[in-house]
Length: 422
Image 1 (cartoon, rainbow, N blue to C red):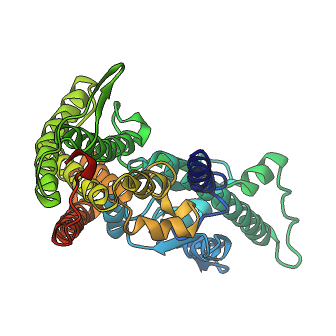
Image 2: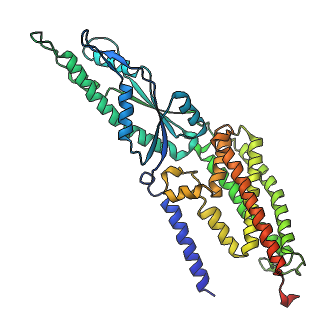
Image 3: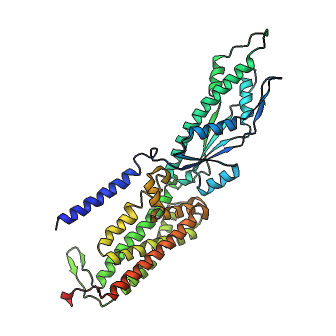
């Protein structure tokens, strides 16, 4: 009587602890295939004194240095044009962009000349664009990777620029001695590039710095999961299959002569009605809290679909496995779902097996769908298409499982009645 629940709960909690701690304990160690775009618009420049001119393109050199310096097993560095990079940022396909401007080599050349000649100069810039709409923790990872890599590039460019300035100052044989570089000039040449970190399409206020999509998706999943368990228990109690107990009040209604299949149809019907009501309630609460939602109808329809898909699948699992279905649903939707959702820590910064789970786990599909609606203007390429089709697929699986298993049980005469009660 006591050994079984202890063993089940211990195994259950061991799985819960492993999944939840493993995905968050060391994101940098787990980093893999993290998509960052690199846009090189530098057109190059001609530097040097008359007679010793040379064509340079520091943008190409930085591109090569970043390719070699950023570990390919951790970061998917994609060299793209500016338009393609912006499109991928708009759909969340890349998490950040390193932008080398068209006048980068020219400004470096001016900085080199300005170090020994009077005049106003400006430091060349490299821009690191983050994509806060992809997730709260994504920005931190992009900033860490980008600043570390660009700092190394800045050091290399500084050494090369200093060497070129020295070479340009070297007099011909018999000429006047070259002027010495001042300490301030050496410092400026050693750190020649200004690194600018800026968000691409910053999130408006009321988005929880990119967390509202995750928590909204979590609400939809819980509505389907908790709804399925509540509907399952209350309908069974009303039909007399389980007792009803509220505090000291206890009643067990007579068992209703109804098939498993028809019972499941009733529960499905209640779930569909409830899902639409709850989807409207969530949308109303979000509006009351001034949460920015540009596509309320799309969010309502998708929310109802997601709740229905989770709820019907959960009810089918309960119809198939009985009380054990509670544990199965918790493992499927919560224990495996939350760590593989990508809602807090991106999938590319979690262990690879969580990336495999994210391909079919409901929580990830619901999250990318909600995120696309709230943050990416309901863009199908940003995840809405995946969210919709995976919800439809999950709904179909739930319907097929429920129909097949209840029909099979009814066919075999495995009716839900207690012989002792008649």
